Image (cartoon, rainbow, N blue to C red; front, side, top):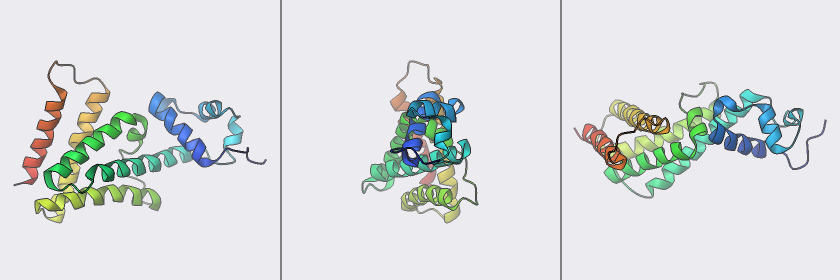
Length: 186
């Protein structure tokens, strides 16, 4: 069976990314992707191996896009300004891409070198920024985990409508980041 002209892995993954961000990961199926592309589901198999391979590609896309967002936000910032830039970029990514965001939360399979590399780029970027705080290598890992945890908690609560009180959310976000910064300044 020859591949449909104009259909390729990038088109399939970008379509799946759009679906996962608008409808959620649970609702994504090969039939839904094929319908959106106006092809029959078997046509997808000329380009992908199945739904697990699409999810893997979506994870890679999410990690790559998050890294690019974080890197662009830094724009030569250092110290506290860099942490704030990263925090805002992280939460903005989670807002714009809730489906992709959900796919990048767990550590990649150690045997998948491409996903490992994409994940490690983000860790390396965070590590480089945290070096401004004169932390040990071990403390940098703890700080990365702490920052990721508070940003994920904030993003998750926001996505799920957990902030219903009539108090300025931006101020809460700033206080949260300030608290993190206080913890790394010893």
